[in-house]
Length: 330
Ligand SMILES: [Zn+2]
Ligand SMILES: [Zn+2]
Image 1 (cartoon, protein in one colour):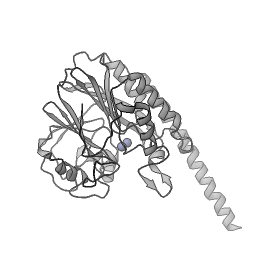
Image 2: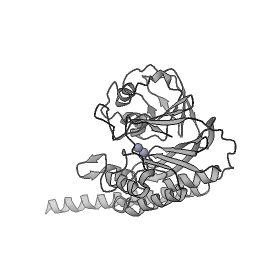
Image 3: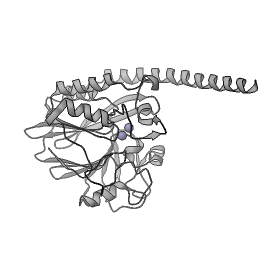
Image 4: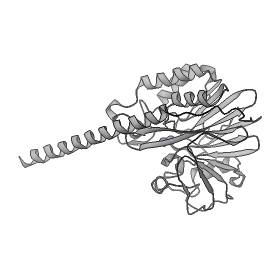
């Protein structure tokens, strides 16, 4: 009898927690959606442009061969004319030194001293270089010192370099602005997530001469529909490519706790039992088709193989694999 009583109390507490959490999420979602809807900005007319552009995935879930280290995190090396941008810093889940980021950097023959700037999409563990980094709002290249001279870091929220690599200058901005000729920060598009709460994510756009905008996304919590809306609002330039994470851990995920697909729960702005659906993926595909890019490439770090297959079917020849060690020339 006592056990039945304990069980009822336990179930009651779970129900209470879920009710409070659901109300919190509904309120947070309403406020974040309101913030997105009320955003206004004049057109950025003289963005400048770059003549040469490539993207080398340094950290992601899939690689071109097994000599690279893979993990459900993101780091891309973007070469825009003579500027080397390191976008995000991987996960380094096992707290290694050298980290998968450094290991793969060495494998592709890139010297970390040649990094010119760092662009941080958002302050989640798989983009900051670790779990403790997320907790302390820091970023790291590895769990030890790395020879990288101080560079400018662009972050959507206050962020500090780790003790291993101090000295980098962090610039925090939520608004769109031109970082450098042809390289534009599209600004924060927030989303309220069930587990992570208010998430301020930003993404980069590069105006490639004669082709158009190359939009590069970290986790894609903003939703690609909102990113495309933002691009139409602030630019008069067609979208040439959409590359990166768009968060579709549907029918499978990359971070599992037993049978529980953590990315599915973490990345949704509704309660987990009404999480991301096929409709969400179809709506994203429709929005991308409307924008009519020539290149589409989806990160496997936060999307399932099933989602990637849907993208392949939808975009055919325009779809390009995103794998560590395989450079995407734009
Ligand atoms: Zn991510
Ligand atoms: Zn994220």
